Image (cartoon, rainbow, N blue to C red; front, side, top):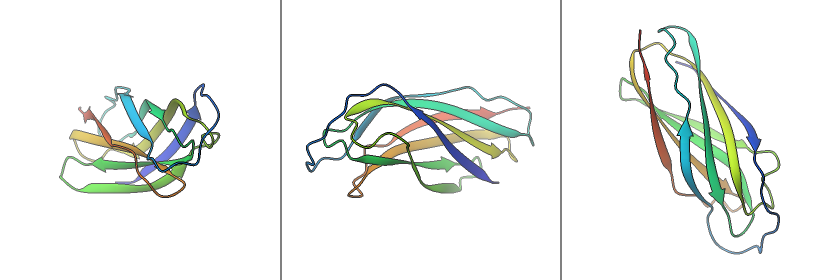
Length: 129
């Protein structure tokens, strides 16, 4: 199974950060439904909201739990325009080849410039025939 990630965009956000010592926080994860036939490339589209008192979030990371129980970790991906933002929304798309029918769990989190990680949110989608 191959998984590719593409971070699509950053929503409206206020500027400014204080260089403090707090990790970002995320909430309101929404995943788009994907129900294409087995064996086709698929895309999961998602969006979440974030707050970051420090304004130093720089990337988003993902983990995908596959139907066979294995976990695929994806390296953090830079989010253009997020630096200096204290709140907003991030949209993303994960594209991958679905080899197996079943449940796919997608976990997402933000990482700041000091390596501090936000809370993690998980959403579920299913591959069906």
